[in-house]
Amino acid sequence: MFITSFVTAQPLKNLPILPGAYQTHQYFSLLKNKRVAVFANHTSTIGNIHLIDTLIKSNINVVKIFAPEHGFRGNTDAGEKVNNTIDSATKIPIISLYGKKLQPNAYELSDVDIMLFDIQDVGVRFYTFISSLQYFIEAAIDNDKPIVILDRPNPNGFYIDGPVLDINYKSFVGMQPIPIVYGMTIGEYAKMLVGEKWLDWKYVRKVDDKTSLGEILGFENARKNFNLIVICCKNYDHKCKYILPIKPSPNLPSMASVYWYPSICLFEGTCITEGRGTENPFCIFGHPSFSNTMFTFTPNSSIGAKEPKFKNLVCFGWNVYNTNAAMVLSQINNKLQIQYLLESYKMFNDKNTFFIKPKTQTPTDYFFNKLTGSNELMEQLIQNKTEKAIRASWQTKLTAFKKIRKKYLLYKDFE
Image (tube, rainbow, N blue to C red):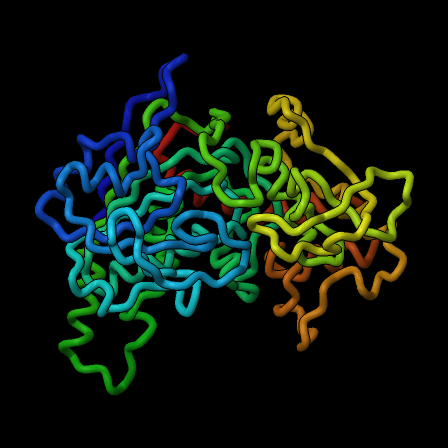
C-alpha cells in the first residue's frame, strides 16, 4: 500500500501547535475538482471556523458528511445511536456511522472521489473514534478511494500504559492489540493499521469459492494502489501537553477529565459510577453504599448523560478534579491510575455484583473485560493482586507494542 505523509519540521519553542487541518496548502490541491466525503464532528475546526465551512468557502465540493459516536454536533450520549440527517447550515447529508451501521457502503461512496478524515481523538483505546477510523480506512480500500487524514495532537500522547488488548476480546471499544494509552496521534495510528496489516477489507473478508478471478484481481488492485495521506501537525511532538480548544465529547468537558478518562472509564464496566451526570465526569466517582465520610455527590440527567448511573441518588466516593492541569498531570504521573479501582473493589461489600454481568456471563462479553482488553485484570482484582504485581503483568506486551509503535511515529517521541 502506498502511504504518503507530509512531515513538518521539528517543534519550535513558544509557537502554537497547529493541527493538520490548518495546513490547507498541503491538502486543498488534493481536493480541488473532486467530490469529497468528510468524516467530521464538532472538533473539526480551523480556529473558530468549522472545517466544512472552510472547505465550502474555498469552493471544494463536499458531497456528504460522515459522523461518529456523539454525532456531528458532538452532543449525544455515549453509546446512543445517531440517525442520518441533513446539516441545517449547508444542506449536506450527514450519514451516521454510529447508528444502524459503522462503515460507509459502496452506494454511499459511489459519488465520492476522495475521503477526508478530521476528528480530535484523546489517545485512549476505548475512545471509539479510532475504531471508526479503521472502518473508514477499510471502506476506502474496499471502494478504491484515496483517503486524507488531517492529523491532530494527542492530549494523552506523552505516555504509554495499561494492559494490551487480547484480540479475542475485540469489540468496537477495542479492535487492535494496543494498550489502553498508546501514545500515538490518529495519523500515526492509521499508518500502524495499514503497516501492520491489521485492517479487514474485502479481499480478506469476502473471498470464497464463489468469488470470480476478476473480483479477486480487483480487490488486490485496490489494496496495492490504496493511497493514505497524512497531513501532519505543526510544532507538535510527543512531549507536548496539548490543551484541547474544544471538548471532544460531552463527558470530557475539561483537561482534568481528559487526563483521568483512561483510568476512571474502567468503572463503566462495574457498578461504580464514573461521574457522568456530575460537573466533572471521570474526576468524580463512587457508589451510594460507600462511607458517608467520603466526598458526596449526586448524578443528575444532563446533556450527554441523560440516564447516568444512580441518577438523583446521593453517592460517596472521590473527587480528583483540579482546575490546574499541571497538578492533574503530576497526579497521573504518566501512568494508568488503578489504585481507585483496587480500593473500590476492596471496599465494595457484595463482590459478586461489582462487575456488570452480561446475560451470557462469558468472559468475552463482560464490558469490563472489553474495556481492559482481556479478563486478566478482572481475575487479578478477584485474586486480590497488588498494584505492583498487576503492573508487572503488563510489561512484556507493552515492550513489544512500543517496538511496533516506533516504526510509525511522525513526531519526535517522549523517550
